Image (cartoon, rainbow, N blue to C red):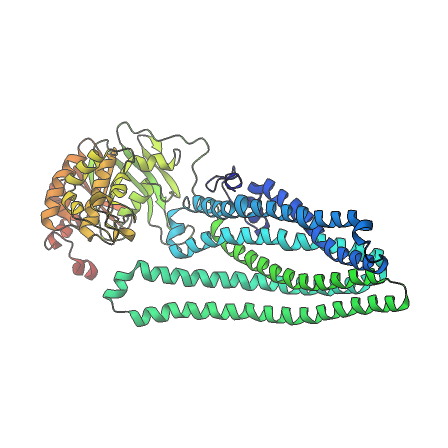
Length: 615
């Protein structure tokens, strides 16, 4: 079993990492990676099907021998016939199905299921930021998880049932034709009607299964969304509203489920009638022929078991076929989410960004989050930041401050113009190298549900524990970490912080994020409300470390609390995606313009939001 287990790796990548659209192409994209194993399965299943088809023949042979052999001479006269029967029943059939089980259950099933999930995740995780902004995380995850099982199940069931049955029916037709061609008439009529039934119901099953899969994904997305935002649910006392929100998706799922079940009920009712007609017709013809003297007992004993096996198999095939088409519907539903092309790729010749000085230039940048629609965020924007310069971005919410940072990080691409770091357009170098050169502490601090050690070292995976601890100390969070313990009694830097760092306070998460950036030590530093979640005492202590961190780096700092960026080399005031003022703190106050008005409205160091709203 271990040998079969190791034939494929569940974390291998295909040569072409873009899964194609179209259910058949999407399925074969993964199946082709297991081509050898599936071809071997088809050979083994065909042999097994032929062996099974011999069973009615053996029954007929035995009945014939009973009718023609004198008692006491059965084994003496026919031992070779029995040896062949035993060889097929006790050797060929078991070994064939054992080998097929090893290939299916060990080489294909676990590896194919997980390789679909891994390659789908690998592709999806490289989608643009907006891709994830427009969907539930739980819904995306559900599509990826269900795709692996649906593809594996549909392909293996096709081989197990459709391919097996096809071989069996061919053998049955050959045997019955040799007995009496009249026996083929009811089979031919049955096959036509069975085919019509199959053709009608299977597309319906696929369609309703796709709708059911989407309803399940929506339901999963809403449930996961509730869990992810459990703090908001609890603090706003919205249990009744939330129950109704999730219950609505459960009802929709039930509606789609009922539609699918109706198709199954119609399908099975029709099949019962078809099978009754098949068995009665073949039995009547066989017995009538025996009565007329044209068929012997051996032929009758062969024909009727074949009819019974076909009847039993037809229900099995229809059951498996309906499951296959359910999986096809699920696969199609998953494919629409997974196989979306990545819209922001590195150029084929892209090299790594080389930062020697850290100069940044926004050159005539135009950008809109919704391309081709009204509401451009910025148009013809120009800003040059010298190497080592510390620049503060000031402006009300929606002025374009964070947008500039997101464009520089290449989370979005500009519509026109360019953003250059040390003269290199960020679109001409790899995205990974751009982000490696920029250390970001944002106001929306999110930690991974992993250990504190993994979260801090995420900034630099190769850092030593000593460097990690030093960064934590500089971020004034080492004492907090020392007192942590999770439900599995992991302590300190080994303690897990919960989903999005929920086990830590906002200020503690912020300090861990600052430690992560301190450890990363990138040449360009972006502070997007980096100290917004900290109390004044901790902020004052961390400011000293940030001043030290900023030495020799190019810095962009965003803050509503103007006192935190007043000491920057230059302040740039934005309004509706345009620069309305720039200069030092003193120069802007002396100018009595927009910045001076914002400064005057501050209360305790924050922008007066009521005054902003009134204006």
